[in-house]
Length: 155
Image (cartoon, rainbow, N blue to C red; front, side, top):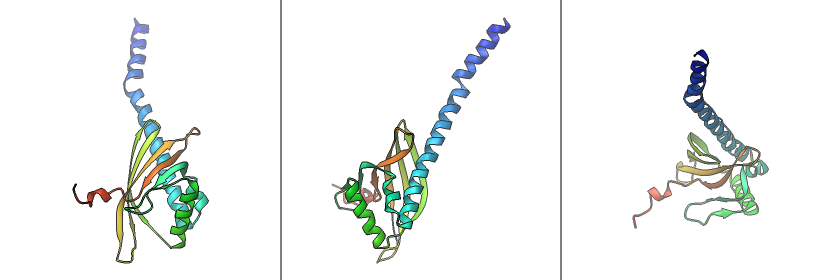
């Protein structure tokens, strides 16, 4: 009888609280790793370290560098774009982050602000990241003007 009760207790723990803790812990660890990728990118951008910036993107990543312009694709083009931004003295202040994880894919949303010729501008950055084989996360799509559709005329 005691063995049956102990087995029931073990089984109930396996299929209730302990299982959800493991999932929450993993998701929490993923969020920390994703935010670390974003922080690494933004810190390297601020310091002008283009190699460090590029290390946070997959080799075939796509970045919307300017609103209403075609996305920039591939390492060479991205490197040139980021280098130009650094040379122009582009600087950002970053706001709150939101991360949603679904398996090996994640969505990162963040508000940013930057000084512009006509005053400060801000937008909503949206990035899609993918877990790499080594467990790290890299950006696949980066759209720093993700809220642009909110200002576009209705069709």
